[in-house]
Length: 312
Image (cartoon, rainbow, N blue to C red):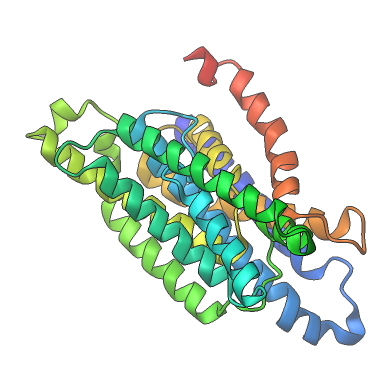
């Protein structure tokens, strides 16, 4: 019965992904220009949605597992502020040229700073969260100051910071290489992630050994989230909701959740992008707003249902 239920859930997730993919590619497609629209607009957007959704969902799964906190999100290590700061600097100094790349490196640098400040020998998740929160608050204040003092570019900065797939400076080839590399590395460590769910004192010979794997998964989450920033900007909520939904529906086995999060994250981002493009067509709604609108009702439902987080 359990295997049947999991198979049914996987089937539904895959069907949801296929439906979202079909809508993203073919809804309101102008047949006279279908080749150009698919090649230059829709297929690149689909690639970015799959990459971004998968990376956020996996990063959230890693961080929620090692922190044993169901509300941990991929921007825990100051990534959102670092990415935002990089994007704002690109817009102010280089007139938006390569803002996705600036966001990618800004996220990586902020994550490296937070992990380093957390210490390697005396590392703790609590210290990481507090330092990450401090970096986010400080950099967020700087970003707000820069936006307020540059009114001519304030709208553009605010719009870009909400996330989306419209950036033309992204190399899809490089994005796919980064994505496949991150997936392969993540897959190697998935068996260890199952062990991280248990008391580290029962699994690892020493706390230093447990900390080593904590840091590895945090670095993996930072790398995955930075790839998502490169692909779609700052889209935080998907990284919370996807791991929660898959865990509630499929249990705790990280080997199963690895694939489930890839499918679920991709489907949510694809469907959100479809809504963003069509809900007030021909205008484009910022993707980050739609992701939150789509995710919040599901999050609250599964949060309050019997057997949910509040009932454990």
